[in-house]
Length: 285
Image (cartoon, rainbow, N blue to C red; front, side, top):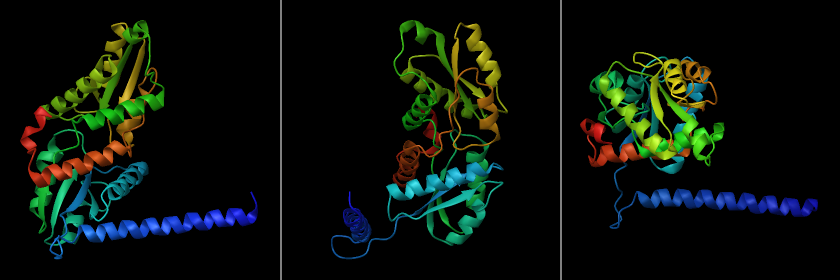
């Protein structure tokens, strides 16, 4: 390929990129105008509520996930707030919104104290008009992400009947003293077991039992020689690292920025707006 041809192709790519940007912006502007020509009110902002972590990878992961959400829903205002440890903290994010409407989507995988107490209390103290979406789990989209992470780590999608009998998974979650959190994690474990066709045992990094090492020993004693640890965490951090270190075979990366995560965030946002799934209905997810 000559230099002239390369430059010509680069110019075409650049022009195509500019045209795509113009088309995207035009689509956004048209979506804000109703059929009678009046401007539609902007939808409530989406506030991602992350737990926070001292591990810098967690903040980077959450910020990337936020960008994925924006890419999937152009024109939607997406913000980030943390419960603790990282800035911006949720009260500061809500204060910056003033009295605008917002939907808070917890980047948490089950019910527990943060969903039931911390986040509602922070929202109640703010001037912003807020709705609280359900936590991300349980949901089939999470099973899609867990399955993909297992395959990335070396899980075989096709295996003999003998190999399947020897295989099992520990679903490693953060843990909570709230019994409803265990119900939610157990529901995800059952969905993943149905998907894989092998036993999936929930285990926890803190505040609940069994621990990941205990779950590994239980499955090994039952004759499972290939035990994988599936990281049921939104982002990297101390708990995710410790759980992965207990894996006797393969361990997956956290769910992170898998495309299913952004789709699920928007699904929870839409549910909160339409009122199709109240928080009290989580157990039937």
